[in-house]
Image (cartoon, rainbow, N blue to C red; front, side):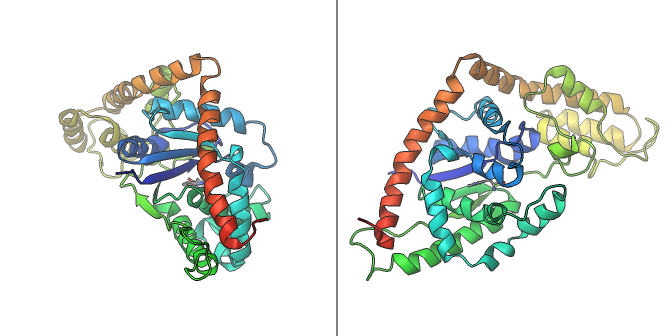
Length: 339
Ligand code: TRP
């Protein structure tokens, strides 16, 4: 039986952090055995918000690929590739633009949210409005059945489904499409039940807030960052009972400390004012560092091999391109633009 395809994308806008690990990468690693997995560095998507400074995009993409390997993704099992190295994405995106009402894009929740959040930039471009439609093309061009995403991306997958339905209706109706040519696949979100981890300062985790632990952080950096983590602000002394629920230090313990007995003991003593913050945080840093060690190791090995990551991405892109070109042949045929 052929495996169904999973397609995921990541914008190469900076270093990857623990949020990426629990929110995406760990899930991708699990999926790679069961599905034909495609993982795309969506560099054009990075341009939608970072068009004014493109100097870091390629380096970020290579660094992200190192973190993918560090986290356990295996380029022998999954296909790693770069969006701009498969220009057919742009062609499908263009055809999708013809059939997509502007209002569908204006009502995607991330559109207004991002505009407000990134108010320092001029995001009045067509490219930014079209972000989810380019994403739709990324997915559909591989006939992907599944898109592993978090809650926030579900509207983008929904939009993709609407666009596919409209496109199929227009061009792939059985009476009009070329014999044997199958319609585009309507993908589904593969929701990952992931713990929502706050940033170190208890705000939303985001590199722009400078409140992340990065997968590339060394041991000392992790220790320092954990030491400065936000915790129960009412607990000014170790003998005052503290609150565990919603406390980022304990949320991180739950996410990264596999020693459940230790975590439960710390929680109990925290609630009853019998443990100092230093002990709780020291043990957390130890757990995070133990979890990151094998990731650092694999990451370092990948980075140490000259041209290795570049080659992985280029070879993966060549493979992806074959699939994308086959889809575009089918699409051009359906749109009746064959000469
Ligand atoms: N919009 C996604 C994000 O911000 C990135 C993305 C682009 C993507 N193309 C995709 C995700 C295709 C899944 C499939 O996380």
